[in-house]
Image (tube, rainbow, N blue to C red):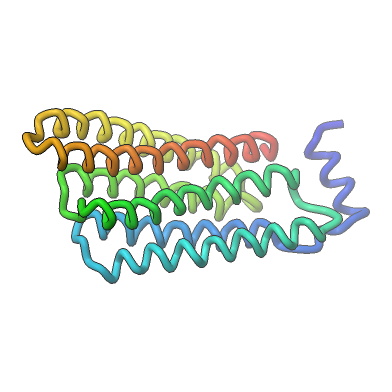
Length: 211
């Protein structure tokens, strides 16, 4: 008996109590709004956008913790509860890195505009849009979610490419102090892409199980 057949058989006896796909979808939407605000902040440097990122970070934490509480109390779930926990936790890490980058750039006084900031923002936002779309379709149409995975991975690869290009700029910066501080932020932006990549791997595992 396949895992999918097993899941359907179990769900008939123990009906799913909560809309976990809906909870993930809400968290993904909040995360997307935060990353899009971040991308605009990297380009324009407006304080309201930075504050928006930090507010979305708080909202995403609340969404994640609420789902975890429900998960603990639920007898049955539509997919493996460990997968639900992991994809939510890892998606939260994307926005944590983005929010930390805002605060770190402020602390180090390397605020926008800076070389390569806007390029990082464009790629991170593009990847997060596809991740949010994949999460949105996960419960009802995992095949559509699967088609988004390639777009996410292309965006993640672009983040890495921008990072290596940014190191060349850092190497030619005559002010060593500025170069070191810039390199620190660039590395953090690259790591936001790493978090997005890890989220995608977990999500893809869920999709493969569902197809």
